[in-house]
Figure (cartoon, rainbow, N blue to C red):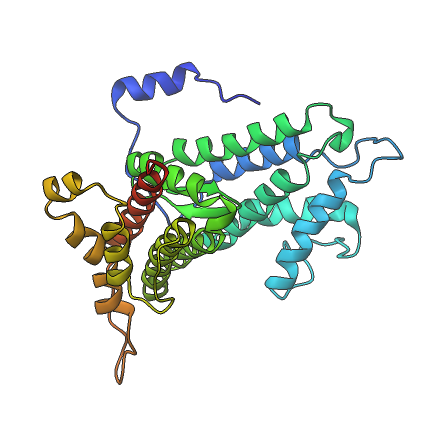
Length: 319
């Protein structure tokens, strides 16, 4: 269903009561309610009659989601409600929605949203799912709506490339992160793509050292892909500094750019590498691990996205 710009929304914007500051510790009841309605539309409402030849039903999709969550959380049922049989596909929808609407754990709610969005993307989009002629369109609209609803409620997450990622700045997200992920979807960038998404996953769960390490890996992997595509020799064990040197000396960046942007080399060599090396690149030794601030990791994530996009576009523009 298309998201409608109703009067009350326009009124809130006119009065300046719409917050553009994101929250991360709560999934409001209103957002949960909308997510369930998206499930009803995209996955389907159970007990609807289907063609006997239909291979996939909504009951089967809800059962798959509930089964994963039950096993991961070490429970037989999610909601604990009476009368739910963990083996009955018909009970999965009730168990899942009762639990989702009442569980206060934000990370677990995001688990459910992420798993359901993956199912909508990979299963409900198949031709003639539930006998729909427009199954792919319904699925795409549902995924778009999930992201719109996150934004409307000021909840700083988005579903991208099969994962829930944290969003700190909508502008940077749209101008750097999304385009960078588009570039990284190319087959040759598969390792860099996985490392970039892994960095965001660690960031969402508060694993700051691991997020910095994965940013660095993504940065290195991107440069190695470019060097390989262009036939530029490099040592597979080379550091980021050496890879930057190889890219620049082989003309990835025209000389007049390097001269005009005097700090470009320093930015490429240090903006991602330095935080990783100082904060997460070596063993912590005795005592507690260093406390890495969120804003530093957010900066490095966005710098990684912008740098990957910059290098990939520069490579495409080479003759």
